[in-house]
Figure 1 (cartoon, rainbow, N blue to C red):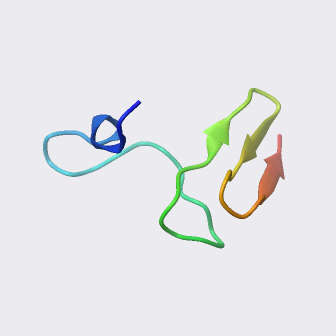
Figure 2: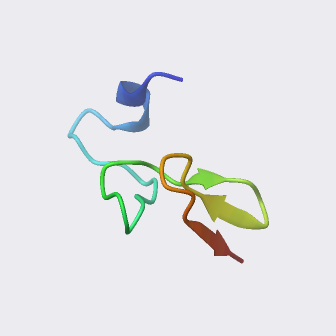
Length: 44
């Protein structure tokens, strides 16, 4: 999915960004959220 599809027309998004990288979205895998760039993981 292209990155521009994650944003609304007003430039906002509901996706969480990585607290380490700051410019990457966290992928939602159901039981965890993961950054593919640095490997940061939040377990739910």
